Length: 214
Image (cartoon, rainbow, N blue to C red; front, side, top):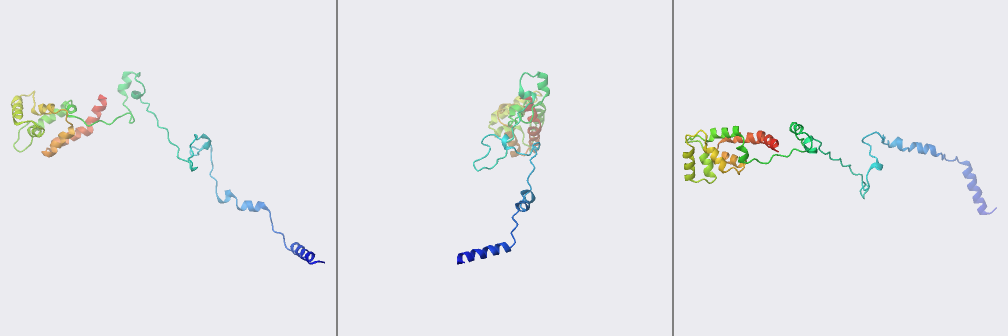
């Protein structure tokens, strides 16, 4: 017997005497099952959270293959005052615009302030009287550029008159200025009572008055 035949005989005898390794793949698959080690999320088709790629529009996936958050559709306003002008006027008057249609009120001007008779009467009572230690309409008007002669003429023309007010005349002359500018005069001359009155009107009354007019 040659050396080659002797070696082959020895290898065959050794392999037949040793136990054969179990190569059943079922136990291997069961041990490394994805469901056992990595639970798979249930994708219920009726679940609103489940994202179906088939329903996504083209280009939804970015070049980096990352899924982007779907953009929510913006709901259009359906209130009667914004859908169509054909609605009955009674319905349009009763239906106030929704928050989406409602525009913020712009800064009011003195001309807007003078349309509120109650506020104007309150300003007349506070600014018309002459006091030696309290600033009034004269100081406000002088600050905005009225001369001494103009102030004197306006004072004599309205003195003793119940229908005319120097405060009202002064405000009418500068009616294109904003109410905020008027509040600055109140701060300068420390008329806190008038300042609070104007601030309350700007915050509470003016927005509703502007919405009703527009």
